[in-house]
Length: 594
Image (cartoon, rainbow, N blue to C red; front, side):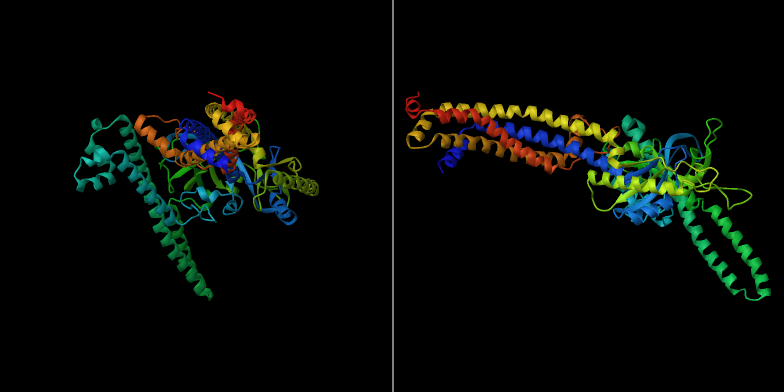
């Protein structure tokens, strides 16, 4: 009991003990924030990789890709119970152009996917603009949904204008402010270029350009919505005309009416300015020149659903030759955009229907022109992406990947002699987990996190030294008091336990303060950076150039537990020598100490 009493008394009475508590708290705070941010990076890469590839990836090693993929997927679902969903995937190279803009050309990677099946294997739908959260996204969402998404985005742009030009707008009469915000041309004329900073002029020009382009897309979508309503009524009339023609005479009369209705429908299809679902594209949100971001990470889109783009695809499929390669070109309508929060993915990828890219990439099935029953070459894909049930560990995923590898070898033997004149190499594949595929990215970050932990652990020696110095000082100052305790019957271990408890209390109290400070710092790290930028112009993390849009702000509680244990251990280590010195004191010599 006396140990607890004296420990609390020393904590309250010795002001310099607070420095030890502060030192421990500072080390805990730095370590928790650093490790949490690094762990957040790894988690984001994991989510992005799983969102793009699923849990397991099968990839053909030859240039011809994977044949008979649908048959293998069906077999795999039957014989591997851990597989929840799977689907083929094509990744090609090409050039993205914007219709009516001869100056825009951007190299992109083109992903061929099947919707809505893609959402069963990955979290693809969570990053969509028009169909966000829709468990069954398609390349043909309702036009009204696209229009609503654009109008919502316009409100977000309006908030940016109100924030960035708050001082300038405040100078205008209140009645004119709303009209000025809604008409950016009026805003430029009202404020005058000379009254704006270069940064403000650039932002206003960019938003003005985005509004103009979005207005074009909105007009196209609204026209398409109107024409689609007319087409629905015409198709209903067409069905009625076909159903009402019962006699030969009626059929002859109806034929002319049906032909006229079909002609009107065809004309309306041309007027909608929307390509059919097979020729629609989902853009990665971050492709250079198609959007821009503010300093605090808000995205303003130039291209929105309704715009038309042209994809020129390098055919890397079966018909690839080393010389004389010509690009396959096709026009697409933008129907949505996608974000993974990883800029290296969002700035390069566009998504098109799987069968469309298969044709553009020369990977479709080929048949004999004279005898269509003779297959010259089967359809192929680059990869098969697999979703595994539950949340398996990396070790479990590797076991499942090994089982799938064996199943493929068995499957390949059965299809090796399939009668085709241009049979692809079906047996040469790799089966990897998402982590194995991303090891080049994940490995260095894990090493950096380990390095950060080591550096912070070395810095924690400062906390051990502080505890040691303070406890040693207390032992020297309390020599007579220690002598009294021993004279009254306290054992050497009892006295040592007093100082061990004191060191552990310093470590625990410092850990609690450090964990609380680390939690609030990590959760608000982006707001803190924005405040530092606005007050002092200090920004260590720019959302325009780093891999992620914002600093990860989730606390790593597993590491927090280890940090608390380490802080207490540091207090005990710091108390070791002072406790031993106090335990070895002889009562008579301690009482005579001056």
